[in-house]
Amino acid sequence: MARQTRKQAFTLMELVVVIVILGILAAIALPRYVDTAARAHETTFETTRSAFDSSAKLIHAVWLTNRRQNPVDRGDGVLISVTNAGWPALEDAVQEPDERIAVLNLFGGLVTGGLDTGPDGDWVVTRVGPPVSPKALFTYSNGSAFRYDPATGQTEILPIP
Image 1: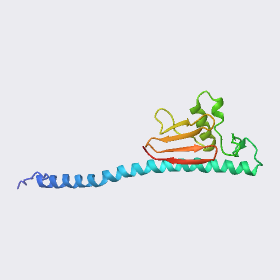
Image 2: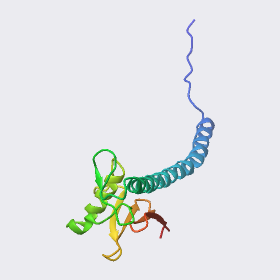
Image 3: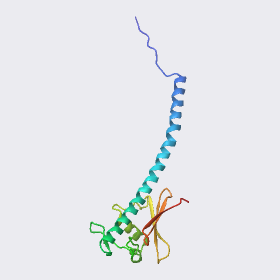
């Protein structure tokens, strides 16, 4: 007796149900993914700012401990110039033809590893303010920015425009 085989296939209703379920999952997952990416950028910015701030405070503490000697050895032979108040200075920017490089040197000196500031980098670093009292402005790719004042050692988070 010959056995008849029947072709098995999905019905139109089953396909519609699967497509609806995938649509619902996409509607739920996509906003969460976008929110996660935004939080990751915020966390990267805040971590970098905190690392810079902590490093500046550490250099200041070493300056106080070492009887206010300038420059300060950060502990591995790298010397950091400091202001009269003992905070990491931007004074190297006066000698550097490219002020941006001097500010990057400051950050690289304070935080090992530096910043990704290449053509496709996440950071833009500039020197701002009058020549007598310059400040460093660090702007992240998501628009977040902080300013470092070498006169006081303070970092200030700026509002996103």
